[in-house]
Amino acid sequence: MLPATARCRGLGGATHGLLPSPSSATNAASPRPTCRRMLLTGQRMILRQRRFSARFTASTPGTAHHARKPYVAAATGRLNQGMQGAPSSSPVPMPGGILAETYQMLPIWLRKCCEQFSEGAERDVMLLGTLTVLSGCFPTVKGIYDGAPVWLNLFSFVLAPAASGKGALTWARKLAWPWHQQLATASKQANDEYLVQLQEWKASRKGKHANSAPPPPAPPFRQLYIPANNTAAALMNALADNDGRGIICETEADTLSGALGQDFGNFSDLLRKAFHHEPLSLMRKTDREQIDITSPAISLALTGTPAQLRRLIPTAEDGLFSRFLFYTFERPAVWRDVSPAGGRGNLGAFFDEQGKAVTRMMAATAASGNSTVELSERGWAMINAAGNAGLVAAEASGSDGAGLVFRLGLTTFRLAGVLALLRCFENGLEPRAVILASDEDVEAAIQITNVCRAHALYLLATLPTAPYVRGKSSSFFQESRPTSPGTGYVGPRQDVPGDRGGNRRAQIDHRQLADKAQSVASRRPLSRKLDSGRLGHSPSALRNAATCFINDHLSFRSRHLS
Image (cartoon, rainbow, N blue to C red; front, side, top):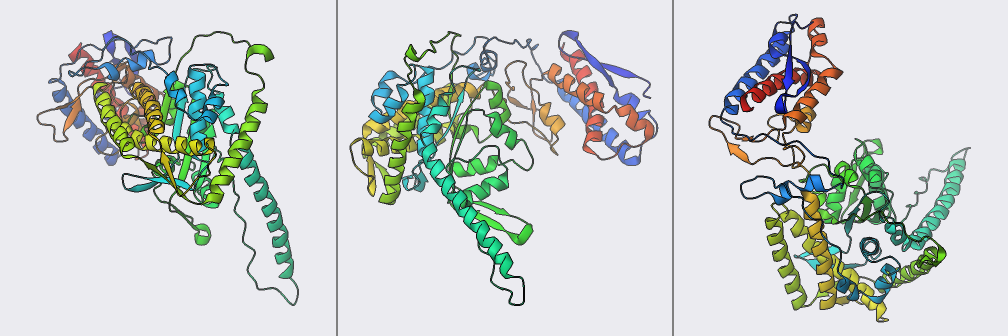
């Protein structure tokens, strides 16, 4: 056993637990030469960090507060930080909703669907959900944005506490459900016919006069809605069967984040590529099968809670974040009249009728052939002006939201295309080769994206930035990345003389780092490994060895900076 232990003290001298010290680790039962070199290398690293720590001047971090509202504590930090990098103590107000004048600019049919819900957040959720679902219903309509052909597909994400009215997305999903059922029914019938043909082919291969013909090809399974509970290979197959098109619509974001969390199911890169219609490829060892999708087009509509956002998009530098139209809200706990006379009527019957209308629109668009959305010169000038204003707003917020603003420009163009297509049907016209989006449609799209940009910048402040790891990546060091307590804010990088690696972080959350080190050490004590002489190169052993180094480093910094 290790003869000594070192207490790890964090903020205010609070004891976080007992961890073996580096000095005791080196005096344990003689480990293998490889392990000894690893321990000595780690100790030299800590000694070098001690010298660097003496040059840091860090203020005493405050205690993290848990606010009643899910966003207040997290959004207080980076969004309000000043030029000096100091987080502000005042909470950031939540952005407002979509303006009433914006709804007056919408096509009558779309406005009618949204008016079934109460004014405010619930109506906004219905609007964003409907636009996202419709963006995946017209694969023959596209446009030219920044020199590249793009389709109308949108990504939207609504965030709110439980039972707040996010369920309006369910009704938006019903709009395209009849078309999905038609495709699925036809696919099942084709599969039944295929199974009969396959049995006949197998029977023909028996006997003296065996048939040498190849087996009949399996028919594609066509569908409109693709489940989020999927794997990367299954998603590629679904896209290949549907000409690279599909809609993912889930009222619980955990359905998608759970799939992305699996090694065999992580298709976050496929979603990021599909947003820009970048080619997708997949090759399997079995039968040497290869799937190539030239121009994938996926529409993605999600709702969830703030905690589900962090499971799906853990850091602010995840490229998936900048591709979404975000909307978040909180509303007081007020009971609504749920009786038939309460004003809602029969929503099921209403949206069944609207689903038939969407089916007619989809059939007319498919019959008319390919169409191109175009904007007037004034419309393009409005989008360019909105983009410049968005960059100014992102810079003023103190967050790195430039990538978000750039992609919102593309989203604005797609929104204008969806509104222009609905305007054609409103005027009794079938889509033609060219669909001209009016300036009113462009203005409505800009107002919607302006609201979503404010919500996205608000949420961006609640997410930590990407882990700063030097050398080989390790989940231990990535999860223990230093941040300021309660805000997710990381201090600015500072050039340290003598540091060959470059930069260091000025602010460290001792409490988070020590708790992580203790939790790792409690799972696999380092002393057991050293006593038995089995400490090798496994990731768990390396993390346990690093626990000793971090424990000693934290003890020194606590004494030095207190």
